[in-house]
Amino acid sequence: MSESFEVHSSLRDYTVDVGAGLLDALLRAEPALHVVCDQQMLAHWPSLARRAGVIPVLAEEARKDLGSVAQIVESLRRAGATRGSRMLAVGGGVVQDLATMASSIYMRGIDWVYCPTTLLGMVDSCLGGKSSINVGEFKNIAGNFYPPSRILIDPVFCRTLPRVQRIAGLCEAAKICFCSPDEAFEDYLRLMAGVDVFDDPSALVSLVSLSLRTKKVFIEQDEFDQGIRLLLNFGHTFGHALEGASGFALSHGVAVGVGMLAAIDFARRIGLADGSAGRTLALQSHVRELLAGVPDLSRVLGDVDPEQALRRFQSDKKHQQGRYAVIVVNREGFVERIQLPADSETAAHIRGTFGAVKELVA
Ligand SMILES: NC(=O)c1ccc[n+]([C@@H]2O[C@H](COP(=O)([O-])OP(=O)(O)OC[C@H]3O[C@@H](n4cnc5c(N)ncnc54)[C@H](O)[C@@H]3O)[C@@H](O)[C@H]2O)c1
Image (cartoon, rainbow, N blue to C red; front, side, top):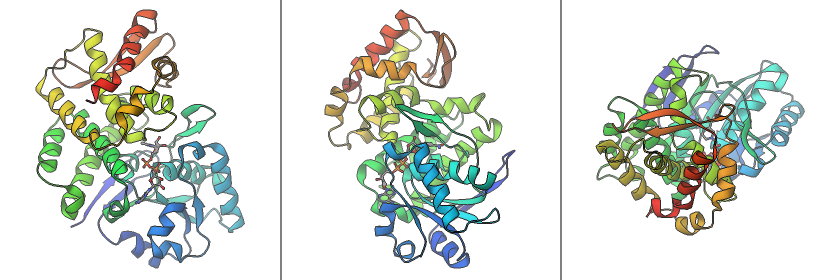
């Protein structure tokens, strides 16, 4: 089973192909590609390991910085890449963020292809053309838009993915589908019911396709994060804060899963919605079920200092001067972007949510 569709972008239109064997076919067809690859993938994928000149990248959050971008640029130069060269990036979100930035600035920009190897990369981050680079203690604070010309998704990469990475990807897919005002979340729940998508290649292709086609609607309407696309930050303001405050013991997608539960709790605290809408309850129960598979989650969340999480929440780049911007779930069970005064009352509610976060996943 395979899927293919086009994404329209003011920067350049690009194609997304989902199916088996796509990476090896590209490697055979284009021997001159400059390959940037998650170092760990070299052990799993013989055709990459055999290829000369691969630029290995350590896929660690702490290495998703400008120094690593510079290393890729330097390696491309040493490998003789020119303005007409094409780069292939193979890896999860860390490799993608580094590759987006490096390809955008190398000789003022070269063509590139992305092959995501994590479920999170497949269902979410591959689409939208954003890079997000950490600087100092500030996560994802620097970045730009530079989409690849092709995205090749081979779900077979999920075979070697650790369980937590699978759960992280499912949290992001659930989030994207939930953010849609259409039937995507119901379709997602139907797809997930009674089947382990990791044992069923066609269900996995359908899941990736559903999530990306849903995200495509948002990004084609609002490519540069000025309006409707901001809704996809649901779970992220709380999630990023928890991710950082846990010292990155929580992986990104898992933090987003917890962040969605936190945003629902926060809406209740500020009196916006009590969380009793059917959609909200369905999301809560699904996310809790997913998160139950994350070892040690309750201990990690119990160790998070609410004050530190609050400070990280406050430094989120989506806020305006004097106002916090938060995506919450409203009374009807749909996501909504609200702005709240950045005062001590709001801070007390945020602190309250972070203080209770361990109970939210139980
Ligand atoms: N730019 C965007 O639009 C965007 C969107 C969402 C997330 N992100 C970023 O993505 C990052 C998270 O990325 P991620 O969760 O995809 O993972 P990752 O790139 O952090 O990789 C996680 C781990 O899985 C390993 N791995 C990757 N593929 C594997 C495979 N097939 N089999 C076995 N192990 C594999 C990696 O080596 C690493 O150890 C965060 O930094 C986040 O900020 C960016």
